[in-house]
Length: 107
Image (cartoon, rainbow, N blue to C red; front, side, top):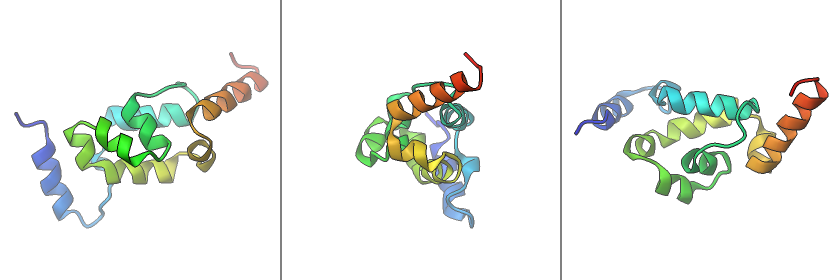
């Protein structure tokens, strides 16, 4: 069964811009963006491990494609997720986003 991994590996090997966010599955990128903006309070085990810099867990929870593209995902998180979110962890970041929305008059 070809789940795109072999193609991703070939592209990554020939890419001059590795790591490159175009190798990240759209639903992974979308989840990262929604979490970092406070739109969703929780992610699955793989992405939570990535967000909290728990490499061993991220590797253990990744499917084959995400394992191959993990450097791309990590770079995307580093460049696009506020450092405070990565530093403080998921629960603290979710609470911060909720409090910020409440202060802005949101629900």
